[in-house]
Length: 90
Image (cartoon, rainbow, N blue to C red):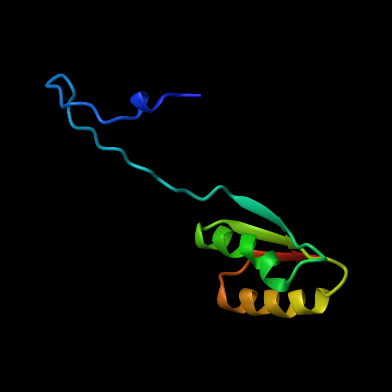
């Protein structure tokens, strides 16, 4: 447990120079997304869409129940994205 004094703003000191921080995001590579069988359809794509937006290649393992819906959705993704970007495993 930390005291609130550690987080309190301190007076500017001449020895502290201004600091600039940068955050960089980069694609990881190949991402495996697992589709749960007992959740709504949007839960499956909650992991798939952010991975695609970051530029990763995505492999989706669909559940055995409700696989047709995933198949049709993945075909739509495959038509609109570059070849090999999304893959489907059933």
